[in-house]
Image (cartoon, rainbow, N blue to C red; front, top):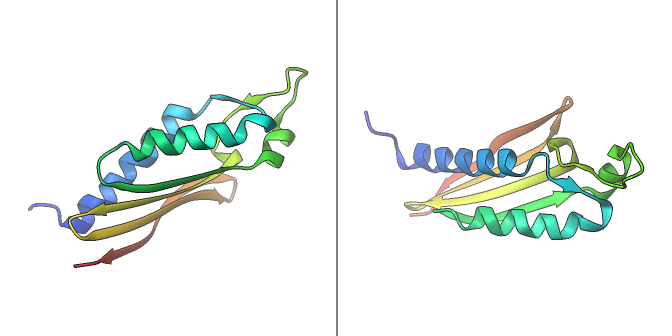
Length: 116
């Protein structure tokens, strides 16, 4: 059985999240570098096929709280950011999000719509 367009669009969203999370987890981040890292992450993932938009919000306050040494930076983890990704594939739009849920950075499909 072939995958439906909606299933393929959701799969593409998963690929984008896997790439974003595992490519950037561990990146050094300081409160004054959150915005530039957000833009770099967004632009890198938006290069991928079928990706309409990416919004990364690295919470400066969470970064400050995570710094536990004199070097004034920490490593990027899912607990420090919220992410939204929008995919468009064959007339299907998929909205996805990553946010903390019960102490875990949960990635989920928020909405799937057929725009044909």
